[in-house]
Image 1 (cartoon, rainbow, N blue to C red):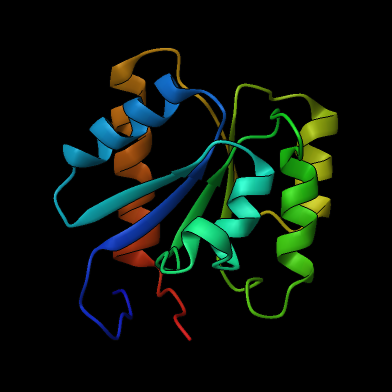
Image 2 (cartoon, rainbow, N blue to C red):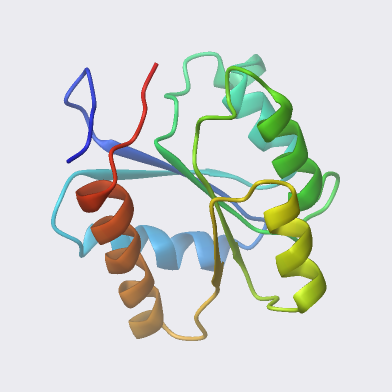
Amino acid sequence: MHYKNNGGPNIILMIDDNPTDILLIKEAFALCDGNYEVCAAEDGVYALEYLKQHGQYNHAPRPDIILLDLNMPRKNGFEVLGELKEDLDLRSIPVIIYTSSATKEDLSSAYYRHANGYIKKSVDFDGCIKIAKSIKEYWFSTSILYEP
């Protein structure tokens, strides 16, 4: 069950500086049953502008979930996660860390900052499809998402 007032697409904001990773996730969600729109921000600064609807993002849709890479220029994923979870208007958006790192330190730091999940990036497209289907099954089929 998914609570959405407008009946529109499920919005996923992917915050990642790697265009290939963004393309793979977009393609993987295109193969999932359902209506998904994957929006992208190439670094943490753009992500926060998107989420706060500043500048070029003044009409950006509020995401239902966020896929957040940790290693990015200008503002890394930990900084973005910290700012999101401190913001009263944004903290309810589930943030799933989606990164190539699986170190104990990164896991600990992400969950300490209130990440809602942690997924290690796949090295191939089949793995990306499995990840997209898992996200779809949990976040868009089982979980009830909050929308203000």
